[in-house]
Length: 335
Image (cartoon, rainbow, N blue to C red; front, side, top):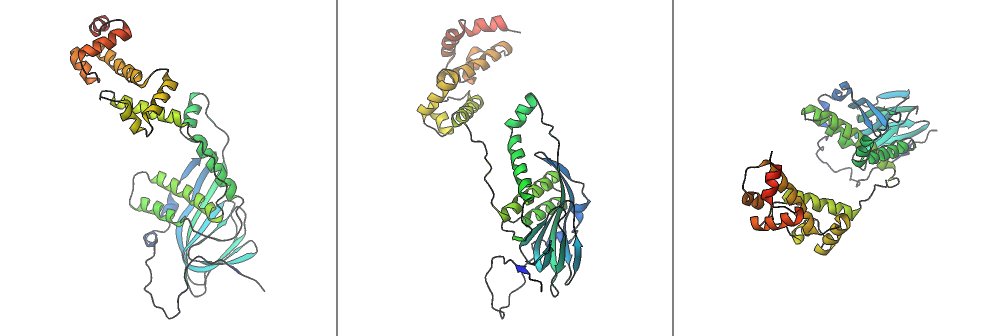
């Protein structure tokens, strides 16, 4: 006699006499053209893996419908948005209900069957995952790639695929709403949204990530933490460069980067060897030198536009810094 294992999604019991209106079907939109996304040839790189979408659709099994034992050499993700039925994974049968999912990994023999009295809907993602050869960039390109998060993506993709390969052959509850990603991708196609390829790519990656979470939270990925002093220095520097023409104070910039004025002063001394005021002065004088060489405006106009309170003060600071006056600099460097 065959024993069927049952996994129950959460939910309260209802009295058999209770009558409720049928709830709207969340994936009604996909019923219009359920296999539309299958026509798209979507391939993309994720970390060190190539992913090709083979099927990405909604299908409906009438009551009692059977798909006999078969297997695939790729990954196939199954989600039950409505109805109930049965699946046999390897040699073990399980009952299926709305809100459940299961994964048939490469070469896993499986059988599917809708309930004898009730139809069963299924969302299916069938993908081929291929490990790509290491084509890491070298030189400056590699440094930029690492700086912009490439290493994070590689680590996350590696962790996800490794967990997919070891997931147990049994259904689970779709507690992290991987099913929603099907509707997101379909709606992007249906509405002809800009960036359709990107939406589908992100939807597939989210399905993979949410599926492994449904089985286990897994180990936490070690995302590199910031050097907070350097980070705040960068924020302050960028704010100064964007607003150098305004009457900036140490207190104003410190508030923007959410630290005390004393801490910000210390950070500037560590990174520049000088004070906060000296750095602002340097930025302003750099712009003034350019304008003196290229502009026909008066010294007064240039001084005011670049954050100096008067031309006389600019004259004093400029001569102290460069050993010459703004006018002498203009005459020497005028194009």
